[in-house]
Image (tube, rainbow, N blue to C red; front, side, top):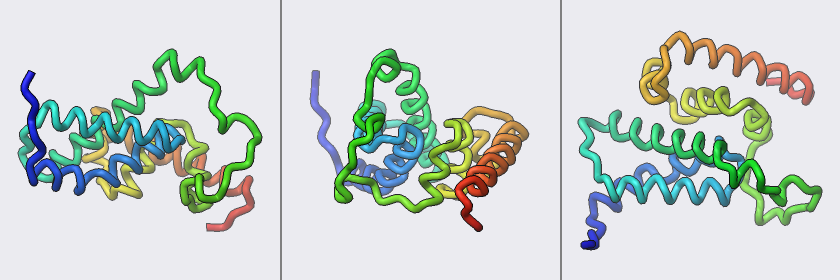
Length: 165
């Protein structure tokens, strides 16, 4: 098996999408270690497949789609279902070990995964409903409905937390 070396285009691509991929993975799996694993796997797949992209939108959509699929697969694995996480216990974490999060991000993480995903893509990645539908392979009306429901659930969470936005 021959080894391929990284060229400057590969390094630029990794640098360009690294933070976006990690943010989405962290948003969906809620754990920095699992997010780092998924982040790494996305770029391993990129380097193994070296897909040809039609344009920058196609490029970005590929990275988002692969990340979302890997996160979905993560939640389906038997390993994850049977594993107890340290976060499930009441241990206090050191402030340096925690991910910096705003209060609103912590509340968004309480939403079901399908709603977190559309919220993340719409607000954090600034994608249109049409682009989200293409990436997730869903109808635009489905994405619109999920976005409305996500906003409604988030409003209730904010109300319960007594936060005015």
